[in-house]
Length: 254
Image 1 (cartoon, rainbow, N blue to C red):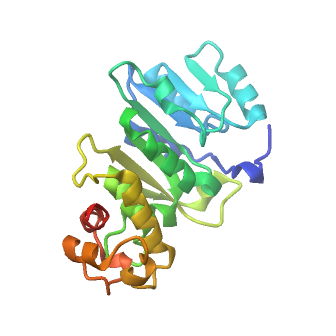
Image 2: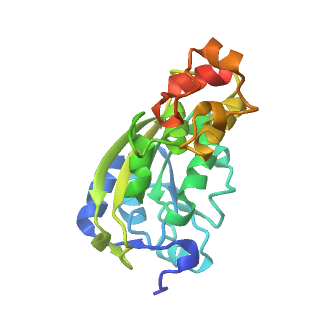
């Protein structure tokens, strides 16, 4: 059996109770277009396949992919040896349908992977992930919370966020030094606060939080003018962590 590899951020889930809770939260059914990111040793793959009958899985580690290919041969697993950070998820979406994406994401690439998935959210129905607890806390944080930041705004702009249960380190091998948490992300079919230019919106949010202790006037110097602050009804002396998603959209659109 292959040991966990640090360069892939591998921590293998082994707790039967936690596995059962994750699968119950996912509730896979036959006919759904399911995609697992980083199946590892198949802890989630096995029960999901048993319920759904078919599953796409993306695994970068060639040795693990070979083990999975042998173990699940002829059982409905479509194993893709690819890097999820560069993968075109639209290539797996059924005509007129959407993907259900899930997995125990490697902590060392979780944030860039989330942004990559947000870019492809048009073909995604929902996403159920296990992540480092502090990342989930940031994703679900409200304006004014210490954890509220760029990730909070960008995720909440595009998705409904539901932070689910906490997973202790002992549920993995090797045990990580931090707690994990399950999160359910459901991309909005209709955005509640659509930005006129999403690239502009992303730039404003990124610049605002790049130096979060600075006021908006200072952090957005050269990006947002005093006239635009006034048009958006945003006080430039505020700090970014108090602005809601809707306010960031107004500021970007001004």
